[in-house]
Length: 274
Image (cartoon, rainbow, N blue to C red; front, top):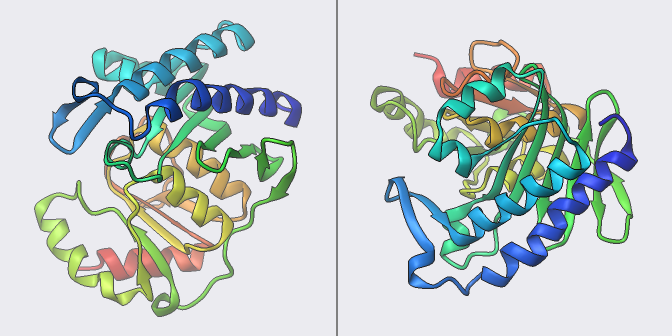
């Protein structure tokens, strides 16, 4: 997957699944088409499941031999997560990121996909079914947004600013209680705080400039492998909170993204310093 043409063919798969499986169900879900998985805030809908089936089937045709680990299939078979991190090549897929928004009728959700090589993202896609465009990145080849007509524009992170002027999306729902008690009172240190309940849109905003910083604790690969690569190729710096590079084997423990390393250090100090 080392060409813009190949990347565009994958983007077309996501766009087709959005048109045929996701959007017809938006604000049109029957009572039995929404259910909880691990808890009341962890939802799955008929759109998640149908989109995943459609994308997996299409990827098996255009990229035979590369396994696909989708969020919903991994929920049914958790052993698939280990395969995603250790396989030579593997796709990871979130068919509807922002399911809670989708189920509530809020038009803020997307489809996320990354191609991993030994757990490292080397190609990434984040499709917006509402605006019909896709953020795409290839390792070493940049990041861009491509619309349904094939028009594209490059992505670039924001210029660094002081902490008090940063716009940040800080996801604190999954923090351990002691750490949550430290982080939540510090959110006012930023110029503005956004939490969209949709990693796809948060990563897209960070890669294009409106958001300066991101903080996540839970790190499921389908939620963050695409965003990490797109953000990196847009010029940003993302790393685990101990400074190590992102890897799909790490499922919790925190990650920060910012325009550059100095901004990253400032965010970590502001949120996590004792």
